[in-house]
Length: 99
Image 1 (cartoon, rainbow, N blue to C red):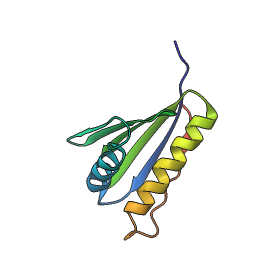
Image 2 (tube, helix red, strand yellow):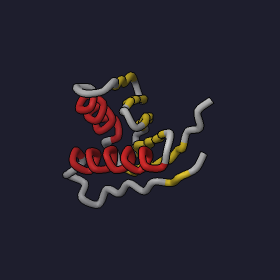
Image 3 (spheres, one colour):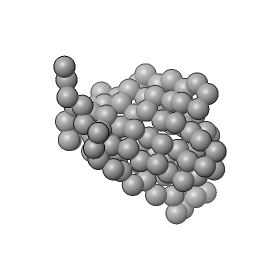
Image 4 (cartoon, rainbow, N blue to C red):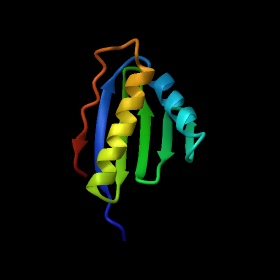
């Protein structure tokens, strides 16, 4: 069984649902991406990002096979989220590594 490295970020925002759908639709043109209800999932070559939207937060859980892939996945998700959340300049994505 393949070992997966994980990280997560819980981002305070009242626009979590909208951002999750935007991320899935944006990446869905290039890689497998799905969303239904409050949950979304994007599968990249370097790993996978699962999202859950609530009224006040967007949680992202990233998984990859190696530290480089996880770092790249974190960077890609955070940079695109910040681009979509340009109306929230203080939006911060703080990744926490671990199981």
